Image 1 (cartoon, rainbow, N blue to C red):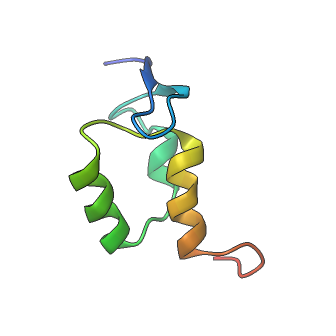
Image 2 (cartoon, rainbow, N blue to C red):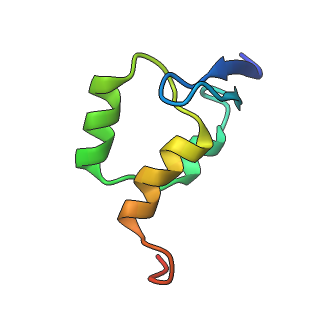
Amino acid sequence: MKGETIKKCPECGQFFSCLGDEDCWCEKLQIHKRDLVFILEKYKDCICPDCLGKFAEKQFPTGEGG
């Protein structure tokens, strides 16, 4: 078990919690494949919930559900 790691978002500088392979919060977000490829190419590490949430919001804009 790896446990919790505190990381700093490379996009906005916010600190956040990462659980890695232990069912982390990020695995619950639905990100379009094209956005996921962009994220993986642009950032060398995880990005925070707020920044990642912006990509999920593009997938399912508020009010459209999903």
